[in-house]
Structure formats: structure tokens, C-alpha cells
Length: 505
Image (cartoon, rainbow, N blue to C red; front, side):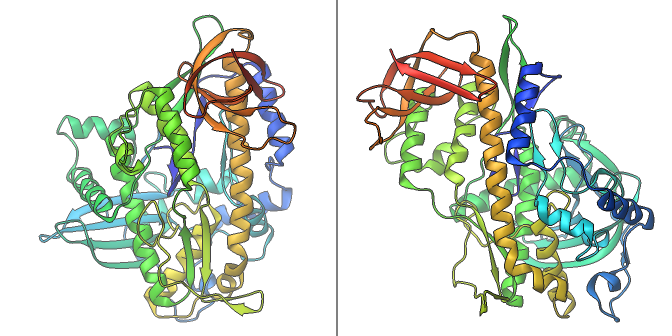
């Protein structure tokens, strides 16, 4: 599933080393947006020393004198379930029957054990904010010696972790949640494909079978709440039959959705814990703008996706199958509905005033209050929200270094999100230009999905969504008919300039 937490993104992946022109354009995009590249020497040195030490003890993290040592939970038969090749493993899971429901144990990498507050490494994580994923390479938030090494929940390695224990009733509703620091040892690194194959063949271990059961139950609870998950398939850029490039959609497997529900479950439990504590950091998302929903109607028409009048977008999304190319393209475009996501810090002083928590701070897509706590190797906010939950569960004050940072975190993460969004859009522009390069002057069929109502120069401008290839690009022409099918001519496709432009035929 091409999503980290709650806000899906369009993940493009070059299956092999891309053409030099594409690689150069992506490098130029990183430089333009100042996506960090190499880690400074002092940051690398601190990370290497932290990796050698194996992580700080709990008392050093919290500043307390009575904090217990990590509980030894190497007896829990945890496994990680991730895309093939992943090494930055934030989460390991084990699901058991309680006799009257389920017990979910979810181990999360304890990044705070490796990052000293206010040191060079901490400052660098705040500068980066999150791991940035590109079609060719990823730019990690933490140095690889930690993100894919000492802090990652790699198999057959003793690792410091934050262990969530969440009890569910037979319907999948939360009955209790607890969190503590622990020493864990993952048993295996399983890919989504391996997990799905073992489940389909009836050969999966009990924990994985129960994870599938819990995942389905939580999906039912999500529908009952009015929430929706967007299973955006990964788009693989592959060599085309004519020597150019083409896009193939990787089908999203059911186990990806079930596994994602475990992360969402933990985030919901964390949000409730922070509300009880009166201090914390929630993930927020407003309802989609009507204009974005209307635009998506046009995309549905362009791709031949059925959207009956009066049916909510959430119901349409649930009917789609990522294995169908038109559905996969529509799911990728539906990420526009998730604009406006942010963070809400509360219970701390910022700008000279106490930041309070509204009576209802629900996340619109999840339809519940929610927090980011499950991806600390790849996202800055998770480290701080996790510390609030640990403090509340232990009945002790939130550490000062956490309280001091909370007021600024929403702004830091907003800056990170804007950079990531611009980078993602730029990557899509590069790939779409590469797909269409050499076809200038050709005629295509599409649907007008957006129109500039008041252009400054009087020139009609908007956007067109093609069906084949599934490209959305700028369109020029007088009297653009919003929502209607049109024939357009490709006027420009420049990889270097990251630009594709069409005109009405």
C-alpha cells in the first residue's frame, strides 16, 4: 500500500536505472527543492556512535530516576511485513486470540533511544522531517546506519522497541491499550507477496491468520465509522515496446490493507491515550473540498470509472480494484481528496498561549481521532507522540524535551509536507513528460477535469485527464467544457523542463 499512515501518495518506481535524461531531471528537482542529500560529518559520527552503543536506557531518554529497565519481550514471536527489499523496518506485529477477542502486540522502533535531544542528529531530523521517496532513490530522515541498521527491527536481532499491547473484542473494537519500552527480537522479514501467498494457500502461521481476521474486522469498523482507506497502487516505470517508457500498476494485495489497519488501530489508541493525558500531537484532515470531489468526477469519466449520481466518494473508492489499470489510475488521482492534512499540538504553550484540544478533532478519512506513532524511522512527529503515550501509560510527566518541541512540530511537519508534495508532483511531471516525449503533434482523447475560471490573460486554461496513457496535464483552449470528453493535441513534452502541455484539437 503506497501510504505512510493516513495520507496516501503517488509512488513511482523505476524498475531499472532510468534514462539519463530522467535521472538528470530528478536530480535537478531535488536540488531545486533542497531535498537534503548527504548527512553532515558530525551527524554521521553521532549516528555511528549511537549504533555502536545499541541505544540509550529508558532513564536517559526520559530524564527520570525511577524508570524501569526495558522489559524483555523477546518471547513474543514478532514478524515484519513490508514491501520486498525494505530494510527500514519500523513495525513488527504479533496477533493472538484472547479467547474472547484478540491481543495485538505491535513493536515500534525506539528511535528516541538513538537520538540525543538538541544534538546534531536531532537537529538534522528536524531539518528533514521525513524520508522522501523518489522514483529512483529515497532520501532517508535518519542516517542508514540507524534507519536500515541498528534502529531497524531486522530479523534475528535484539532491538530496543516501544511495544503496544491492544486488546480487541470479537467485533474488533478496542477494549484496552497499553504501551511500554521493551527489548524485542523479530523472527522474520516477510514481504507482502509472501504473506499473501501463505494465507491463500492455508499455510500461514496462526498469528498471520489472526492478523488477517483483525484486519477485516477493522475494515468493517472503518466502514461503520464512515472512514475510508485509499489503496494506491505503486506505479512502476518500465521500458515501453517502442523504446520509450510505459507505466505498469502494481496490484495492491489484501494483506497490505489488513496490515495497514494494525497501524491505524495503534494510531487511534494513541490518540485516545493523549486526549486522556491532556497533552499530545494529533494528525488531522479536513473534509474534502467540493471542488476536489467535482474534479474527481471528471477523472472518473475520463477513465471509465462508474460513479453514480449521489453516491459518496468513499463508497466509490471501496468498489475499485487496484489490479484494473483504469481503477488504479483513478485511485492515484483520488489522492487529491486528502489535501489539507496537518498536525495539532495541544496541552502545551505555544506563541505565549496554551494550545487546547477541540471537543472533536477527528481525522476526516479515518473518521476518528488519530495520531502518528508507528513510523519513527521515517517521520519525525512519531517520536514525540510516542513519548507522550509512554509517559501517560507509566503515570509520569511528559519529558521536558518533548513538551518543548511539541508547539513547533506542526509547523515543521507542514514544511516537510509541502516539500514532499512539490517533489512528488515534480516526479510525476518528469515521468509523464518521458512517457509522451516524441509524440508531440499526436491527437489524444480525454476529459476536461479542471478549468481556470478567471485567467489573467484571457487565455482558456485548465487540465485534461487522458485515458491512455493515464496522464493529467495542462490544457489550453477557448471555452474549455468542464467534465466533457474532448480531443486534444500534444503541444509540448519536455523532461528537462518537467512540462507537458495540450491544446484543444
